[in-house]
Length: 142
Image 1: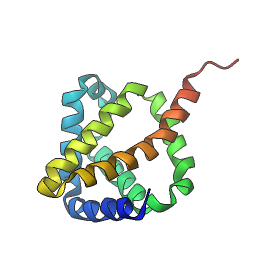
Image 2 (image 1 turned 180 degrees about the horizontal axis):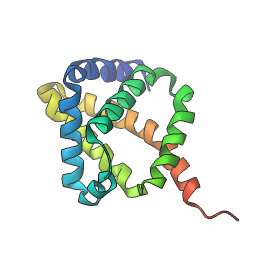
Image 3 (image 1 turned 45 degrees about the vertical axis):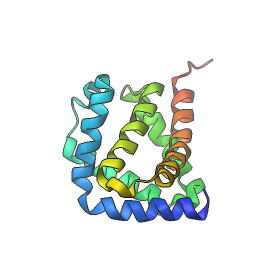
């Protein structure tokens, strides 16, 4: 990511983070709308705790966006863990869509094309190692 994209990610996250729980609620509501099958993945989940985890993960990514290589092991572990909970490769696209939509709702007119592009790049960089680790974990052992 370039400096402008990093700055946009950090500035816009600072605007939505004060309402973190509401943002997370909006995110999950949107995710369940666009990918209804994902709701069953959370049937046994304490959603208040899950929302806290989501915001924590996003805050970590924003904080380390210029050093993502340092969090790749964590991302890969998350990807492997998601497989155990029934997450499929297609769900990553739904999560990305829900995230962008949620940010757009929270930022309103401040969610410009440039901001959307920066968050799209950031999500791709974060979800890439997760997707790869999930795919690796899903392959049968030889």
